[in-house]
Amino acid sequence: MGAIFSYVSFASSAAPPAPGLGGLPESCVALVLTHLEPKDICRLMGLNRAFRDASFADFVWESKLPPNYRVLFRQLFDLSTDGFGKREVYRRLCATSSFDGGTKRVWLDKETSRICLQVSAKGLAITGGDDRRYWNRIPTVESRFRSVVYLQQTWWFEVEGEVNFPFPPGRYSVFFRLQLGQASKNWLGRRVCNIDHVHGWDIKPVQFQLWASEGQHSATQCFLESPGKWVSYHVGDFTVGSGDSGATKIRLSMMQIDCTHTKGGLCLDSVLICPCEYKERFNRPCTP
Image (cartoon, rainbow, N blue to C red; front, side, top):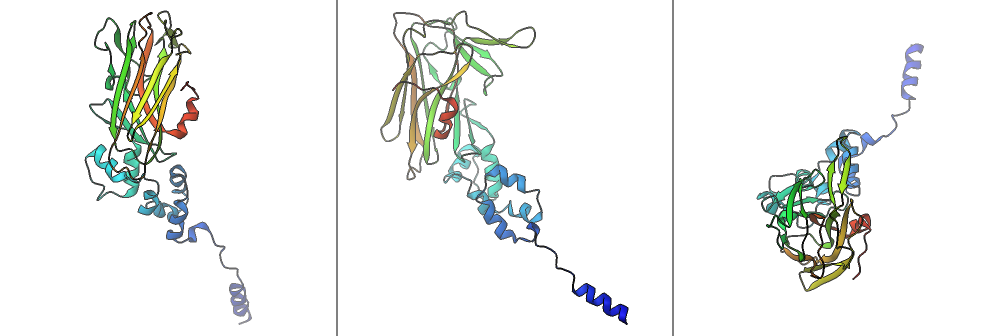
């Protein structure tokens, strides 16, 4: 009997198990996840069952979606968000989608939860762009669109573009992605860039302009430089207000129309529209 008493006393004095993350209510975990970045939410999914189940909560991912995500989803996939979990809606918007005959690509930036849009050179209006005496299309892996256009030589250089898209509220920057020279691979597989035909860009600057809804307009100018490197030239910024529920129309241009000299040896890849936070990544100031 004494042995039995000792066993009971020992069992009753054992300390209860220490609390852990696995004991947290799923609703509390989900509330914590709303304050984290999407990449951190995905990492925590493997921590335990509570975190995995909480990571599928609709209100967690709705906090990461832009306010007009239903409009964007309909625009890109021709589908309603009904029947899709918010996590799946977020995943699909983050994947790059093409539209307008493949000339435009759009995706949701995971760091800012804002839309980025890129327009290929094929989706821009280029003066003389169909004349192969002046312009050629070149396949390359250095472009998202797998090709760029190359200007051999011209007197009149002018490129224009137009975008009509339901951007979420926020402030955006517009860039032209250009390169002086024509890149290729040598027999060792190393990248080389032929700059023999680059000329005329150091005489007069290129003019960049941007027009957006509600009378927004900006104009800058830059001398093109850094031969052999892709450079993103800042055109300007525009703002989409919280009350703008429809599509935002943007017009942009790039020109150097001083006909006192020729210019050539330029590769045009695309136009990028992205959150203003990206501006510091490119660090290519232009003169207003």
